[in-house]
Length: 125
Image (tube, rainbow, N blue to C red; front, side, top):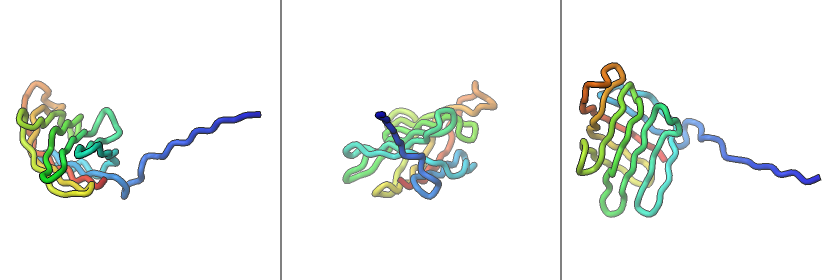
């Protein structure tokens, strides 16, 4: 009899790769994130598709954010895109980053009302 077994790594427990996110000063708590690096580019994202965020950072001699997209975080859905929408600043290194800035979008309770929301992400990859 021949059998095949496959295993996959479970999602990291809190204390592993995590991020805390605040929108307009409202902390949404600590979330598990997936982080990976391709060359100088870091990708940090929550595994949930309905509520979470994706951040793309450029590292090297300077560090900057390329984009941050929020999906229903504290009711906010919106984006930052470097040199296009909102603004962002990044500090940190070696997988530990703090990203702050503004993103343009809307809140779920008033989806037709365009707003700029302040955000803060503290990621430990």
